[in-house]
Image (tube, rainbow, N blue to C red; front, side, top):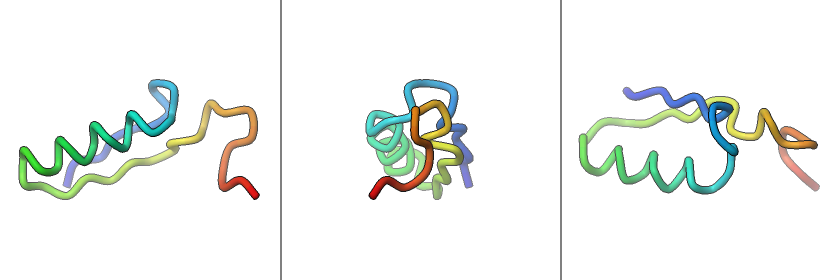
Length: 46
């Protein structure tokens, strides 16, 4: 399993797209942590 820290960059959809591509190329599972950490309202939005 590959673990990606989503708080390193902008924490948006590009991290998800890159993680999906990485998973397909390597054949390994990918886990993204803290993807919205740097957003003004981190966590799930309503």
